Amino acid sequence: MLRVLIVGAGLTGSLCACLLRRALQNRVHIQVWDKSRGTGGRMSTTRFSDCVGADVGAQYITSTEFYRKKHHSLYEELISAQVLEPMTCSVEGLQQKENAQNFISPEGTSHIVKHFLQQSEAELQLERHVTSVSRRGASWEVEFTGGQSESFDVVVLTMPVPQILQLQGDFSHLLSEQQVALLSQVQYSSRFALVLFFSKDQGLDLDFGLKYVSNNDCIRYISVEHQKRNNNSGLGPCLVVHTSVSFGSKYLDSDLLQVQTLILDQLHKLLPQLPQPISIKTHKWRFSQVQTAVPDCPGHMTVLNQPLLLLGGDAFTHSNFDGCAESALSMLRTLTQSLH
Ligand SMILES: Cc1cc2nc3c(=O)[nH]c(=O)nc-3n(C[C@H](O)[C@H](O)[C@H](O)COP(=O)(O)OP(=O)(O)OC[C@H]3O[C@@H](n4cnc5c(N)ncnc54)[C@H](O)[C@@H]3O)c2cc1C
Image (cartoon, rainbow, N blue to C red):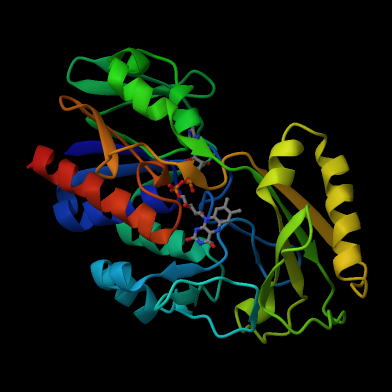
């Protein structure tokens, strides 16, 4: 049976695994590896005690009329599985394209990724950090932290491009000069996410689900997670704050606790009535959203046809649900053509 490794349990990797399973059924053994302790990548949802889960990265899905038609079956699938539902909360300061529609995931955006992973029936290996990819005859030898390795017929890499370019092994020598030049053009914004969890009996007294802030150098976005998701389960409330890109770049390599204090100071100026949280988490998104994607790209890059090695992810399209779907679908076309 064909052994396929997909590196990255974010949206692109999970959807690619799911589509490949549906196309090739039991003719393929799919493994998905991720260096993190959980799945989701930049669509991850974090939890604390009996509080509402917090979306640390992607907040909601916006579909334009064009992509709602193009990815109709994916939207239908997620809506009928109750993984997506229309966003109905009060929104402040959002500039939206005409005819665009917003969706939230009632259990958190990581459930979109979990849904596709579950459908893929792939063997999932977490805390598996790929360090090197090397060609061994007709297959690939993939090494992960600790020096162990496994062999695969096909490898698909979906992590952010700078992390792809850090890989050791002879993979980097297989990239043509032109491919390296294209990959080197990819640029990401950076930002911080701050998550504040409150106890069940603490009311936040905020009347919006999410809000874009325009008059603050540090804070760009705030969401009240249970109101964003219309979740009245009585769990402890939780607030997610995203910083501006300029603040993210300025403090990218600063001490995380110092950054947390700076964000909290600004948050208290914007929302002075906030009660004391029971827990605070700060996350740095070094690779947040793609600012410059790989130019003139069909959604992925083929490094080698025999054995097959593909690069995909939002850097090959654009940073949102439909960008990842475009990349996964374009990889599926190449995978099925090559594997048939
Ligand atoms: C703060 C923020 C807000 C956003 N808001 C929205 C939004 O509202 N709506 C929207 O649609 N999109 C939003 N996005 C963009 C969206 O989250 C991304 O486009 C999408 O999640 C990218 O998915 P991916 O699978 O391509 O990459 P990723 O999610 O980055 O997945 C790559 C995976 O590879 C793993 N990995 C990396 N290196 C290795 C290695 N060496 N070995 C093993 N595993 C490795 C990582 O742990 C990660 O899980 C937001 C992103 C951020 C950061």
